[in-house]
Length: 152
Image 1 (cartoon, helix red, strand yellow):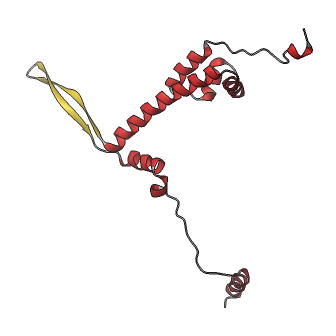
Image 2: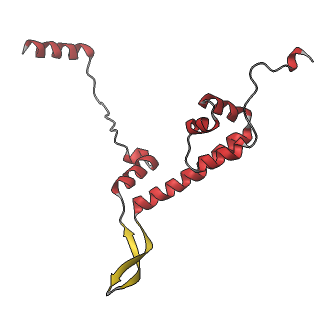
């Protein structure tokens, strides 16, 4: 066996079944740090596995994409308002009466602002840009500061 064939360092704890486990955990919203905790490794090891095992990386990406899109859809519903069917259950004259209704949720202003700030940053960001026109020299500013300091 040639010296080139020897692998240096500790063998990887990675197992092929970790890819599917990671995908399922990411569907539940787990972060890389939480994956590391689950697999009892460091976050650095999770990153190394992503580089060394493309199937592991793809599984994580797929799981996170599904989870993120579900959250985005729910945020969109909160921002725009939504309705869903609901049963109104009441006791009337000793018997239970079930009335199908539609529950309405109005748009949530905070969710709408959050959505717009992230989707249309140029139009909705809080940061204001101030454009300076004209020229103020450093010497002029220093002289004005001295006058203010002397009380003039």
